Length: 338
Image 1 (tube, helix red, strand yellow):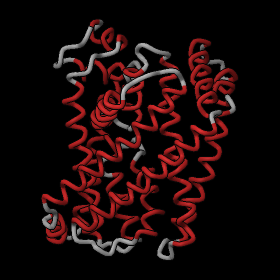
Image 2 (cartoon, one colour):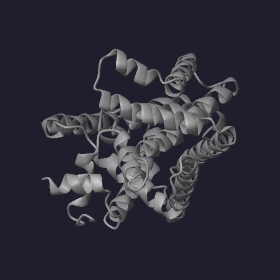
Image 3 (tube, one colour):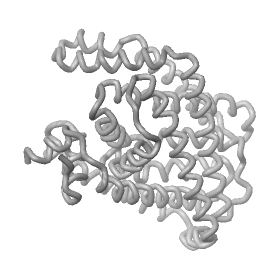
Image 4 (cartoon, one colour):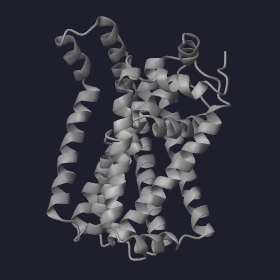
């Protein structure tokens, strides 16, 4: 049974979190305060008149271009996600997955990290299929994107003279972590570790099923190459997106080479679940890294704020679309049990 439009988002958000979420609500409020405080601190150290001047440069044509780029970015991710779902024998239309991706933006807005949106879209797409394999497909889609992002930074590093040694060292540390994470994902290390810790067999069985899907999906060399190509296209488009915003706010000298290195790092830092959707954290990363690439503090913060506003627009669209999406039984049960 589909949930009513007034209760569906709330029930889904609660179902996607662990038990005891209600007890953590004060911490959620604190995260919001932290994010707002970080933004206020940055506004204090940035010349506000320069910031307003940069934002006033944006035209309606710029807004149209930015939304078009966002639509292409989501489409690339959806095509890649659908390919992994097909490999794991889960069928879904591009439009349905596109809607779920936008729903994920909304969930990420109301939850403390980017994981919530992935959980909800996996629940939806796996309703009539193997839910563990739906999770596997989502993880593979995220994993290939992350690896392409790291590889892009490594390739661009030698050609980016303006990047400091500290930034270069951070890229190398992230790359080492990516290799370690790859080993853990595709060698059943996670379930082995859980067994050694003596965790419940039911949890271990679910993790093993997800690992099975990861290994099966990752064993298709052709599919992984296609996913790598799509991921590379996606991250090239993120640079195009950043350059488009930079030009819109008047920073016409944005250096492509440096952006190929620092934009992936900004995205990684922004994913740290300290505040809702990285509020304040991602803006701080833009402020730090874009200055190293030649932007003024006002230009760097203006780029961050425009991209933040665009993510909120996408989240708003996702919330509207969620009202018309039939809820999975897991979410319906969560609603009826309240």
